[in-house]
Image 1 (cartoon, one colour):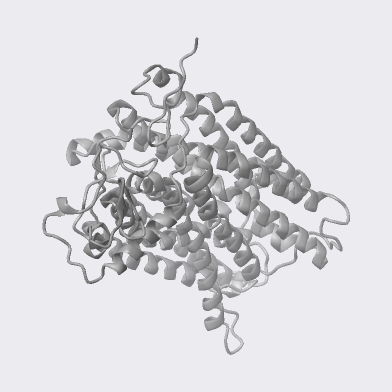
Image 2 (tube, helix red, strand yellow):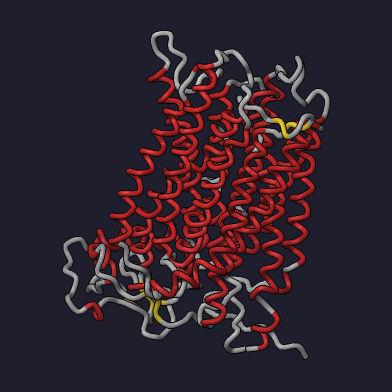
Length: 570
């Protein structure tokens, strides 16, 4: 008779009470399906997003600034909706069932997008060469499909990386080390999908048609769904721990109810469960910290707290672990905020870099032209190069000097990426200065494309890709490790919102810059004809903003204290 799985308090298959479970579930045997799912899903996502600004310009007849803003707004929404998926995963469904539910919304959105670009009457009409003049209904259907996809991805993005990390036992040192490698290979798989999107799919969109260009990503998303469900029997599942927002509000309200109560000097007098286990499903106990002492009031036992048969009113009295959950989230916020400017820099790849490339010579040989959006493949190649190099070479080398198990701390790793991103923007700005000098010298102001190779953009893409490996992967690992055990989906979603806010910040900056610079008959920094603008000023502005952000980040990171969990979850 087959042994039944035993579950820990954190909801995973208990590989300690039933060691046979350790051999048949989790680890890399489960993660290969998760990595395959992510690769195909990212192929689908980047198959739409990489070249979206050109679809908006050519098929929906939008100007440069409008198209760039609509692209960044959609991309930003794709990183806000994970808050919805994360809450559902942590509170109600768990990560597995949240992913399993939202993938179908994703596929439905992809299908509608393909139909909107290929079916007569629904696809943009009144085309004159490359430019179309769609009616309001055609535009509405396109954006409906686009934002259905944004909702669908909201249930996948915050869960899939955490779900992969769940497959490694934190109490096993060998598996814990593999978990650190998982985040590198997870990001590697993302960029395999992005590489195919930036090359094959963009070429199809620009040379075969948008129907096929969106249809292939739809098929890729269906394959992602298949990959995910094929691995079901190997996964270690985690039960939801109840609403994390409820627990947060309980601490806040309990602390304010006891605003006049003094916190005892002896912190062992603060309320905590008597046994070794936390009373929060999916969470180990957390060690008390001395920061944000006001919230410790929520764990001070008073005469008005009703304690009957071991039960307490959580709106009046909270455990130390519950209080530390809130403290952990609050202390993550400054690090989170420092990632917004980096995400703004990253978002330029799909907007300003593409628009800059549109003005340059895109020929490879005599007969082949590479779409400007396909240059993002060099960002992807950079990530595919640096991710394994970091894991296999940089970490062992750095470990000799830093004595850190991971080579660098997660905060150090993220900081290195922030510095590299500054040089990426400076490089883009220098190229634009050279490009505008060519325009001026040859009086090429009204030429759509100048005789300057688009491949001069390669260095800025390579630098952004290198920065991603340090900052984005470090951010993934940092928010998973530092999040309270029962809030990992929510904190992963929080880390993703930096990308959303970075896109929104880009939209705001473009709008403000154009409003301030487009005065007295001037074309502004980012006009429809970039030959008459100053995109270089915009890149230098972002470089300056990134430098200031880095200085603030240094101050934040020096004061951050890493989380300490007590024991293991049972």
